[in-house]
Amino acid sequence: MSRFVELVSYQEIYKAYLVKSYLDENGITCFVKDENITAAHPFYSQAVGGVKVMVPEDEMEEALELLKNFSI
Image (cartoon, rainbow, N blue to C red; front, side, top):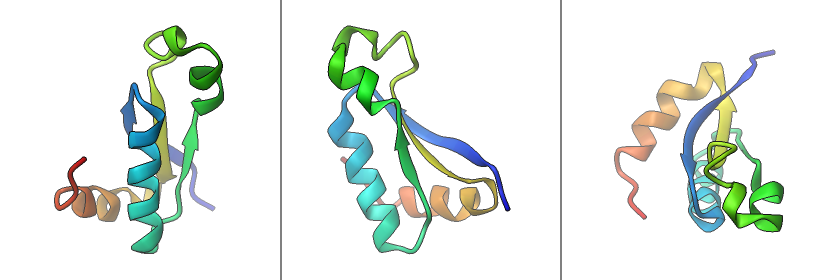
């Protein structure tokens, strides 16, 4: 089993979920991390490094390739 690593991070929750949806549609396993602390305390977003999209380490290259064709 591969460990999960940070693909990208955003200050806004909706951007992370747009990326997650795009990756899900393209068969990449992923989840969003730190959205709860950011939703509860928006000023903490920068302190925790934003809302992160996490992917398995072995799917990182494929996810990065997909993101080249994606814009928010």
